[in-house]
Length: 122
Image (cartoon, rainbow, N blue to C red; front, top):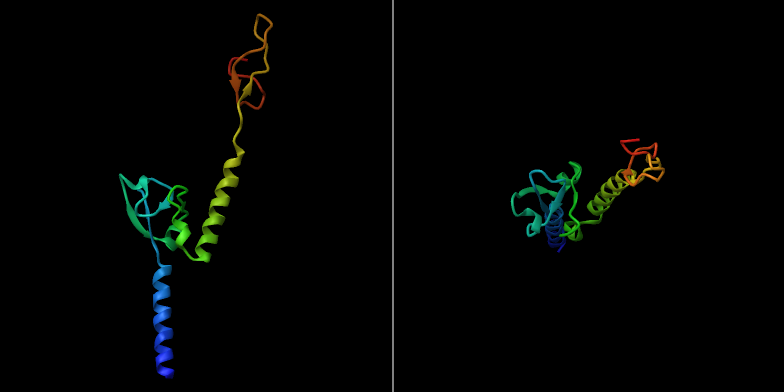
């Protein structure tokens, strides 16, 4: 009876480790990992282990959501990586209208991202 319990324990352990090694797919030039049936894998498709993809800096595709079937540990790592990417991209500058005046005395209608608030002509 004790041997049977040990055998069942080892079989359970073996099958659980197989499910943790999930294969995901990347493209040659992309920065995200996908499920095998994702629409973005039409032109190139390279199989990679999920843990390796996360360690290389790949993030989950928001369309096919390959992280849904993974363990909690991998999911939390991917969420941390995606949150880092989001915080870095929040430094975008917004174009505003130029603050300079034209020769006619009217305000310039061009847009600028320059910190001085003036377009390339002023």
